[in-house]
Every structure is written in C-alpha cells, then in structure tokens.
Image 1 (cartoon, each protein chain N blue to C red):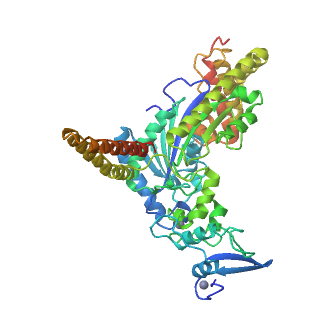
Image 2: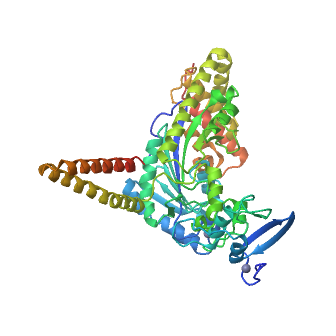
Length: 192
Length: 344
Ligand SMILES: [Zn+2]
Ligand SMILES: [Zn+2]
C-alpha cells in the first residue's frame, strides 16, 4: 500500500488522527509520518544504523495522547506496520505466533518489542553470562577504560612524593586532595 | 554404560534436576522462518560438534535426524523426556545424545539449539556445570547474542539467559492432601511454575511434577538457580510436613493403600501405564515412610522409563497391541515384586 500523503512511497505506519473530535485514519510512509507529527527523531540504539522499523516505533512511543499541543491528539497502533528487513516477519504476525523470525527482529521491532519484553519478563537487560569471545571483548573494554584513571593516580602520587621531598607543602596538600578525589571516583566507578 | 539415573538410590522427594539452554546461530533465521536447505545446514553444523563433545566429555555421543528414526524409537525418546513431544513434528529436527542419556541436544525445535542436561537428585549445580561445558563447545558455531538482550531466542520469553532450571519432584503427600493448587498459586508469586509430568496443568501420573523458572531476562543464571532452590526448600519442607501429617492422621488407611498396591503389582494379570505407575509410586511412598520394607529400593524414575508403551515394546523386543502390553506390563511388575519375599 502506498503512503496516503505523498502517494509515492510504501506505507509503513497505520496512523490515527483525532482532530476536533473527528477521527481520520491513514497509512503513511515513514517520512510523511515524521513530518506530520513534527516529532524529533531519536536513534534508540546510540549512533548506530537502525532500520525504519526501529525509527518509527521509537517515534510513536513519544506520540502519547495529551503530549501534543491543543486538541490535536494522534494515536498510532504500536508496531502494527513494523516489519523486519532481515526475514520479512511483521510485528502483528509475531504477536499472533509468539515467535520472531530472525535475530535482527530484535532491532527491527525496536522499542515496541522492548516494551513487550519488559511487560512479560519484568526486565529488559540481560545480566547473565555471554559467549567467551564476547566476555573477552567486554573485559578488554573495561581495562582500557580503567587504564587512564590508574595512570592519573600514579602521576599524582609521584608528584606528591616529589612535592613532599621539596617541602612544597602547599602543592602537596593540593595534590593529596586531588589524589583522594581520584581514588574516590574510582571506587565509585567500581561500585557501579 | 549406566544411564544417568541408574547409578545411585533415588531420593524420597527430589528425583532429578534439569537445566535447559536455548541457543540460536547468528547466521541463520530462526526455525519458523527457515527454508529449504537451511534446516539440514543447521542440523549438520550442530551434529558435526558431536566429536568435539565426545572429547570434552570423554563419553560417546550419538547424533541422528529425528525423521529417520522409526515411530517407535521417536515415541520412546519422547517418553524418556530426551526430546520434547513437538520435536518429531518439526521439519529438519535432529538430536545429539550422550551415551548416558544425561545430555540431549534438540536441534530445530523452537530454537536452533536446546541443550538439556539431567542430573540425579537435587544437583542443579552438576547439571549446570555440564551444560556449560556443552555450551562452551557449541558456541564456536556462532551464537546470536546481543549485549542488551543476551542470547537471542525465537520467543522473547526465553531471551536473555535462555536458561531454564527445573526439579523433578515426587509429591504424594501434597497431592493427597489437596494442597497442590495452593502450592501452584504460591510459587507463581516467585515467577516459578509447577506442572505435572504428563503435561496437562497440574494433573499428573505417579505424583511427579516439575518446578521451573518462568523468566529468563534480568537475572543471572546463578540468581535463577538460587531462586528455584529457595522455592524447592519450601516445597520439600511442606511435603515432609504433610507426609508426617498423613502418617499420624490416617496411618491405617495409608498402610492399606501401600500393601494393596503391592498386592496388585505382585498378582495382577493386566496393567495399563497410568495404573501401574500410580501403584508403584504408592509403593515408593510407603517405602520412604518406612511403612513397607522392600529389598529392591524403589526407583520410580527408572520404571517410568521402562513401562510406558514405546519403551515397553523396546524392552519386549517386538511391537505389541494394547492388550498384549497390558499383559506384558503386569508380568513385568509381577516379576519385579516376586523377589520381595516376606514383605512387611
Ligand atoms: Zn509519504
Ligand atoms: Zn527478522
């Protein structure tokens, strides 16, 4: 089905608009849907690429009735037109059968699926174990993050030692405080 | 080689522990969306790991395509909980099985891979440890894993750890005192589920149930096991309490039931699966309570693996009609009880 506004692109969103009590239903393409809601688009998964499905479901999460100005209240059925480019699975089909089509579905159905998962599982972040190569990567990232901080501490304590040797107590006091702060910060990081 | 359940005496309440890990290969669509050759490609990849598993486990591993088995063999595997009842209906279904039958890997069921590991008695740790060894071997195939969602499964209800832990429990006293529904409601609050082994709700044969965790996301595998262990402790305490209560309140009645069961198993000429298992479970119950002394310690799980229709026919070595099975089963139990001379 083609978009109801530009009549060019494939419609991906079922869109319900209520203006002055009159209900108007339309199928729109992603671009026109974004234009007509005037909402900011945010990438839900950081700076990475994301599929149209992710974009739109993220978009419509913000399109909550009452958040819009005036009596112009827009309601969209969550995920009704989402589909996964990886396998062709549609969100309604998933709701019907309960199983997804491929690993990419998790990205394709974005926040709509995330909310579903949260409501069913009571959580949306995995905290358990992972494959070896992944765990190794994570460990490496952690140590890299830690390294500059440790260097900073080493540098401060060396300067402190030198300051004490020179009997520059004013500088030593400042370095001592900086070192304490660095230690505290690091402890805080580890607590997380 | 001994089966995993055949190497020591059965416990009175916690019969077995089981762990299941659901995994998928990143390079392929989930089972529901697979087409043509993909089924056999995935099946061959997993089956190809059998040699590695043999090395890691120092034990023989068999692998087969489920479709190539005879109907009787398939049925027997379902009866023994080695595979699920739905696996034989799935296109491209395959099985990798350890020699002791403690590990079965179901291929192309709902997910590409489901690793099932059993351990006798209350020993989730052992089952989990073994599951991790298997998992570590299979993960070389390239699992679908996401830093946020964890192991990606076809159903988001299994995503995260993809981990289910369960205990197989013998709960005659809770059942007889009519407390099962209440127990089910209670453990539901802890996101656990209890179901009868015959599969339909809390109805069951031989007082056997499984307790399993419902959620797989947001908790570590260790946390899930700790939770189920807490629940298990409470169930075991309850079952013990009700056993005592039954002994005090209606000892003659229970005693009568136990010895009647013995009498029927010893002399009946025709027995169906459900009845024979019920009678044998009464015997186990009586033995555990010290009401009857049997020379051969009851092993309910072992009998369960032998007397259901398909396994019974394998035991007999030929296919049997329902009628013939009834006779053969009765004969089997008659002989089993025959050695129990001077039973008191
Ligand atoms: Zn358009
Ligand atoms: Zn997909």
